[in-house]
Amino acid sequence: MTEDAEESGEAIRGPIDASQIPRYAGPPTFALLLRPWHPALEVSPVAGQQVADAGDIACNPFNITEAVGQIETAAAGLLGGAGRLLALGGDHTIAYPLLRVTRQRFGPPALVHFDAHLDTWQTYFGAPVTHGTPFRRAAEEGLFDERHSMHVGIRGPVYARRDLEEDAELGFRIVSAMDIERIGIDGVVARIRECVGDVPMYISIDIDVLDPAHAPGTGTPEAGGLTSRELLGILRGLAGHPVAGADVVEVSPAYDHAEMTSVAAAHVCFELLALMLLGKQ
Image (cartoon, rainbow, N blue to C red; front, side, top):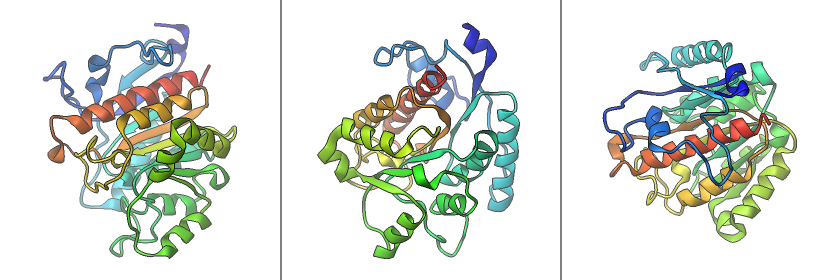
């Protein structure tokens, strides 16, 4: 263990299943599935910092308001003893309480949101707190820096043109999935870096940013998404920028095939841990 690893750590939340090694069997097994050295970034994400699986956050599945409070309380407790938090969802509602805790610890971060969908609707089927509204609620509370935030991978139909106009009014810039096709990985990285400036990032990744061919195991798939190679390449291009926190959400094993989505999510988590380490150096 290095000196950095002794002084600060990253906490991971997620279920535990170590019964199917070396095949992916749940978020915590990624360190066993993936060898520890990251050759592209020349770093060992789990040797240069203390990484701990902090288990599951118990929350009320029948009361969203109560569950949001429980997640916020538990996450704040974890950050009291860890450098940063990488949360594994769960649906995208969890980003809302996690951003509350991140802002309390680090100030408003630059939100970099990878998703097929905006998740900034006013309500979803009349409900104000759902997986389609977390960043609207976060914007209303000033939980991220609206001058330095953006969506990446947006695609597919919306309810009305006004959805996009209201999203822009919240301060978000958009790099759509088709933009990525045109400008490539390096072009996307340049746009993200220009947008976030020197503000630490909170990276929120809905696995449906990937095309269903790469991540079928999710609740709201949209055709025309990123390849797993594109997503990993964009994340690697952000190396060296401070990361205040991150989440990976919307993995639904019941819809997965041959653990394709889980493997992709595991690799994404590995990249995020590498970014957290390199962002401290």
